[in-house]
Image (cartoon, rainbow, N blue to C red; front, side, top):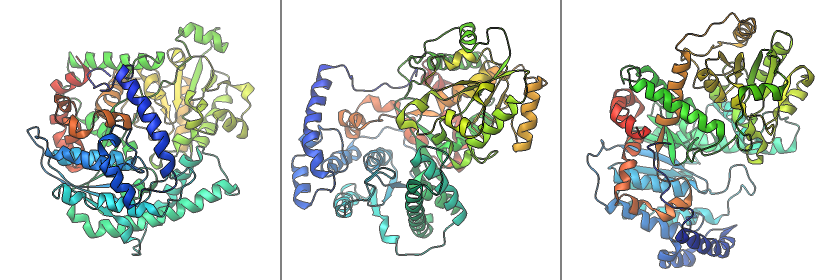
Length: 583
């Protein structure tokens, strides 16, 4: 992404390769020792004693925290960069391996910016959805020995609290929320939308997540209700899945200020959402409301924004550039729209609708299920309605990411077949199909999406788009927005009949939102992987001029949502936008 930082580590350098070999060998020797347990007192002392060597390795909070924390806390001794933001009392929450590394580093950076951080944690480091999910009994003593002294060593600027002490209390919980969240967690864990309570795997996950959700919900309410006035802001990773979702919901229900952050499409960035879980994209609403006041509608800024948006779209189309965190069109060489039509057997000029579902497991977030109860119901309803008419052909393009095992266990083809769809009545393109999705956009009559980014991209081509959920690009004036299932069916009929006309400004408006989402909503952040921290730890980072790239990000994280709209001009002024975009 133009204007954003690149990784500070050159993956091709000789030094990097040599150190990677050292890391690989050392970790291969050490990791098995602590695969099922955590270091005891003597081992922790040894890890601290060998701190300089341990810190050369890739951070591993399962065993290396005794040496890492000592070094990271030195961040607080480095000179500050003026001006400092208003000091806030910030509550963060951590559990699971990897979160302790990322959250402790973030806590050090925020404390360096003048904030007081309370890191509440649960003594658990196993995956929420991969075996073994149960922690070794040593995890509590290990984390307590490392984290309990941080308050003293940071001179009160960072405090860690073991929240399991609040498990004995029995506060009232929100049963409706727990049930909705349980469904979302199941979809994420099973990597599929379709499942039955009769499946042993489903029953096992459901029982586990129901117990964990109720347990965490109770702890969150017990702790936060007692300390809600002690914090100016809650800062949560993601906020929409597993334990983090419980804390995010409880904090909001208590009227606390909540921000969430998440890594998303680009490398070395974080999406910040002021107001709740990150998929709500509240910040996008704030930017959109203020776009004229921010000068986005004025020339030459508007033209530069539109041109940059198309640059991003063309990178996605060709899987080129180093910005994107994933390249889903790999192996699908760019082809002309005419070639795309020919590959589909539509070179006779026949009109077609382009239906783009998402990966099934990525469609379970609570906020998405506003029109249809699931993406499956949306897809079947849409395809059945389209296939009942002969005016235009129906092209269903499965998300290319569904071919990656890590991204899901359920494919759109099985969803269609199991739902009684006759695939001979439509043109179905599986995820692995070689036709590039973007070659079809200029040729389609209209687009129908659930939560896929292809919706806003088709709108950039001037195509009418009907989303089946409350996705972030709805309600902007360049999509048809349905209030319910019946309204959705009526609007789909208007697209089939060709009676809906798009405003002339729709394509550029879609490009502006695309720019906001992919350039401005994603803030530069120095770390994605533990290797980034190893080669550029926070105590080193803040002592160099490189930190200037991230000051705005750290300060934006600390602005409560109640103040964000009034502060948006400070963070999205024309000069800063130009710097971010590299103009």
